[in-house]
Image: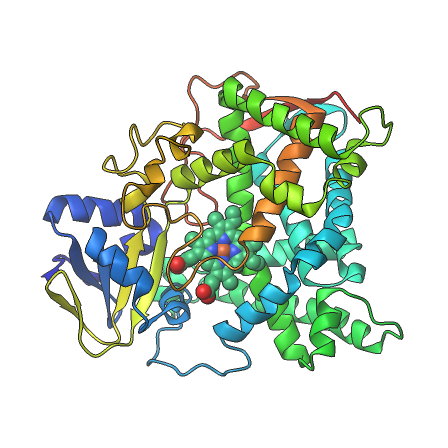
Length: 456
Ligand code: HEM
């Protein structure tokens, strides 16, 4: 296998700080489908091409959570998971809180949460979606994953949100590659983890003492016999698995629509016809209450236009790097051996921005998914927005519901357009910064949405 030359610390550093650029410049430079480099004492194999993709997503001996530990500094020996706290159990618990009947039941509360946050925006103004929309997503995630007492307390949600971002952003290259360095990342990580644990433990204890059990996630976990540490870890994992991607896709959907009148119009018409089919058009109820009358099944099945818009946004924006650790003895890909214990990295742009599958890959064109084009069916696993093979996204149903509800409220209530820092329309549509592993925020100048409320 081709091994990258140069200083290994520089390779590792660039992998953490400019991952997209690092991978693609080296694939292009070496002309190889696979190449390896070192992160500390560990071998990482960067992979591209069909054979790599099929192995990466389908092979049973590739470990998902140990792969992602590469980014958290947990780089020790191959580990055997504790059954009760491992990923399989987490997924099982997650599927339970994302049951259809639960989502149907909680929908009006979620819409009311969105409404409260949007009310705070006022009648008109300029907002940064990468702050304001993320705040909504955090609120919805706390609502579904914890308990009413916490989700109803704006100060605690805000504190959680601050601690969460500190922890999310504390996984810096300095903290991982130079763990002895007395930088802020290490301190931040410790303080933010302790803060989150303390805050959540308080609410778990309160729910244990409550006389009347509720149907909230924390109460369901208590009823299932989970201890405090498991419950706190569960809530934190939902926030870590759910917030970054959902917020990112929601923000970019709004940005792409602001620049595409045709698709914005189609999406607005779809929301209108959903309202017409499931609510009374003469109703004087505020919009979030009218939307809450639409059954969950209709949000899932009767929004093909918005589904295509979300899928196209995922294709353009979700181009991060999936990670695995190889636990197999003799794994071969394209005639090359991957060592047991090596980490494996697959960047999703290998399919999403590949002309072999998608015509004019940088163009926003949601029609590409509908018949007869169906470009996402041109190759073997050509769409990875929700994962594939052994690890499809467990939160997809909930994430789609969140995005659709936020989009429906914005489109039916506000006129909005994209502006730059000076309040003028930008000269061109912003492009996602694919090296920004947290939010894929726009490259260059920040952008904002100028909005005016037109319906209550
Ligand atoms: C727009 C939002 C989301 C996107 C684009 C997304 C995308 C993905 C992708 C691509 C994977 C596979 C990663 C890989 O193969 O390495 C994945 C896995 C996963 N997602 Fe999501 N996700 C989203 C929201 C959520 C939410 C809200 C949750 C739940 C809180 C969630 C929970 C998970 C979990 C637990 C896995 C791992 C499944 C396993 O272990 O097999 N995701 N997601």
